[in-house]
Image (cartoon, rainbow, N blue to C red; front, side, top):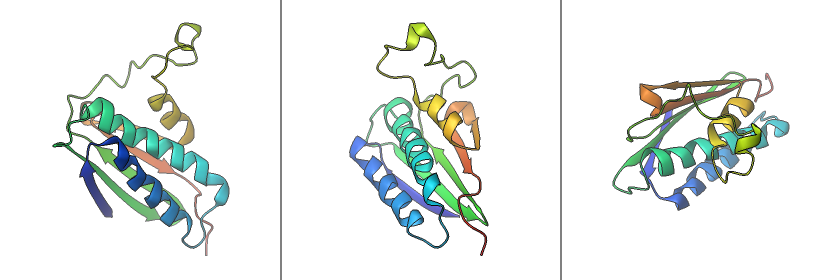
Length: 135
């Protein structure tokens, strides 16, 4: 398992974008998975920075990741108060369509093959299956 930690600054989302690019440039990555991984991960990290740690650059975001044969696994953690991940408003409901935010959890759940929250929502685990071709 590899691990990254960085301060809760919006510009640090670039760290994750570069990481995804490095993983993509590795052997056997399925190019059609790139967008799903990139969007879900930038949403997860943005949520940790903005909503979890409330842009407090004294609080860290931790990202652990691992290539598991054909799958790609991520664990993102923040040090915020958490949230009720079971009752997130549906951004596709008519009353929410015009709202400028509230799509991150929805996108993670739609784009990752597995999306699990724990520790009161401070930790999210995302698994993308079949990202790598078998050797």
